[in-house]
Image (cartoon, rainbow, N blue to C red; front, side, top):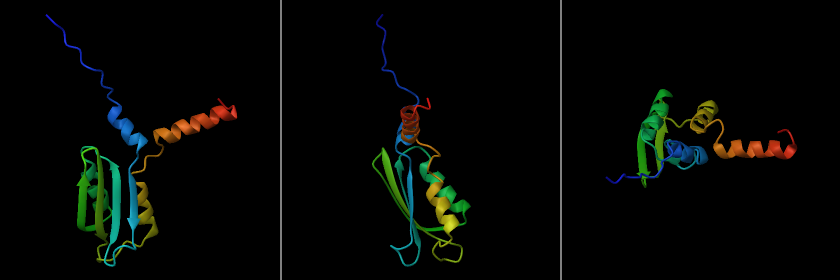
Length: 124
C-alpha cells in the first residue's frame, strides 16, 4: 500500500502576508465634493470587508457608495462616507482613527529592522 506525502503547509503562512503587507487606509476629503473617500488596500482575507464596514458603522458614518474590487489575493475598496448630517468627515480624531485602526502595532518587517538595529548598536 503506497503512502501519500503531502507538502508541508505552514499554518502561519496566511498571517505572514498580512504582517509583511499591513493594510493601508487613507482618508481623502479633496476628491469628492459631497463626501469623504475612505480607501482600504490590503491582502484579502475572509471577513475583511465586514470588518471595514463594521468599523465605519461603529463610528456612526453613513456609507453612501462603495466600490469593491479584488483579484483574489489582494483587494482595494473605496467607501464614500458622510457623517449623520450628510457632511464630509472633518474631525481630525475620527480621520486619524480610521487611518490607524487597521495598521498593526508592529509589522514583521519593522520588528526585524528593530532587532537588526539593536544588534548593530551592540545592545543584543
